[in-house]
Length: 373
Image (cartoon, rainbow, N blue to C red; front, side, top):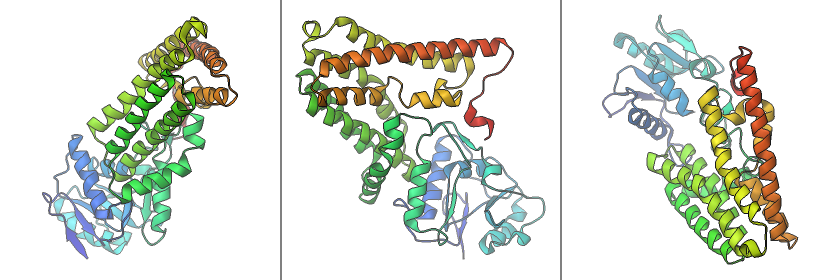
């Protein structure tokens, strides 16, 4: 069955399924992806686009197909799944070929590409490599497709807690939010409330309660991003709210911890200033690396990506502080964070010097994630 889109005739959907994946039917997901592409400046109100609406397409594939008239996306078996006819007279044959899943029906002049050939194999925003996904309903269960989409929404380079602890519990919470229509912005708002609670409890010396709120915030920070990606509901305001909160709150937590300990009467003032300066200068190191070399510092070589898991950022520092509180020594934990901040800053200084040396030798720096992408 061929179904014509009613939105400016920008696309044709065939073999439509009513199966729900992350709160959306395949057609609804495609239409949302097209809307987002339009909002980002892509030309979407053009005839010639055909999609199978019984499959789940990575958003990157939709954007790539929009930008490449004359291309046909095929699955692993070579069956056409979507296409963009550059000649309107080819559209009926393209529709028929995609509806039947038969490459022999494709009109001449169109180029068939798999997912890896159509779109880049490196996701810059998520710092991960791998071909964009294309999942066919009926070949995989809906639950398995959701799980795979969720894992594909994860950043490839991040801290040890986000990478190894949060994935499974965050999957269930993300599913709950999608099922009951809880938006990513509502999750971000809840995480912001946890930021305020943690700051208050740290400042009054209630470190146990503060750590519970802090870890809750870190967990929700994972959920809101995954929820936005799997449901295609991210927005400019949501990104500003989420990333702004992430960027601003750590220094306030360190200040509150210092106050909660009793300030200079309980812990050496240098520890506080080292942690604050280290946080600011660490962000400066990251910006300098991007400015000078065009890539993020943490994705240059595998060593940098591995060190990102434990470098002196929020979650690794919270691990240190949590262990210290459980041992009854929150002041020692604060000093350990200061020393770890110094060591992390020194490591990144060394890597920046090495990067300049590599560039001086005539070699252009490239991320190890893009070398085989």
